Image (tube, rainbow, N blue to C red; front, top):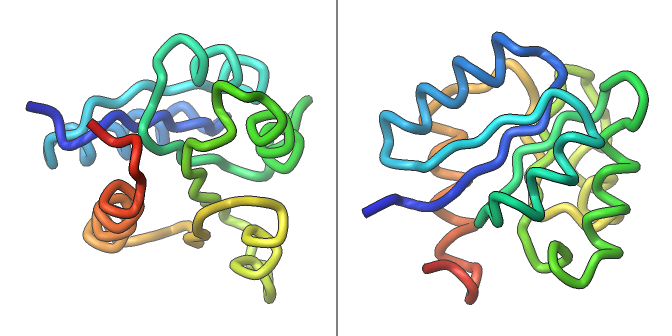
Length: 128
């Protein structure tokens, strides 16, 4: 049985692949999207339990994706963890203010990310 379904939305293909491999090793079912638009479609089709979302992407950035997710009745309850290489001095506060469940700065330790996912999935009433 899967530990949960995780959608990774990031324009860095290698990061999506490597993070996906780590999460798959920990029992998660993982899907990746390489753009904001692709991520929104994947959120509807894949129905993830948690979304990992990068901020700095060409075209539709992570904040726009987060806003679209929170406005959609189907995706609004999915916890979104912002993960970004940019060092925000108030990243966690800004992410929470915009409706994200949590924030993690890249690069991150795999154990730290897995712990964050476990916390989000245990807090989510919709998790299978």
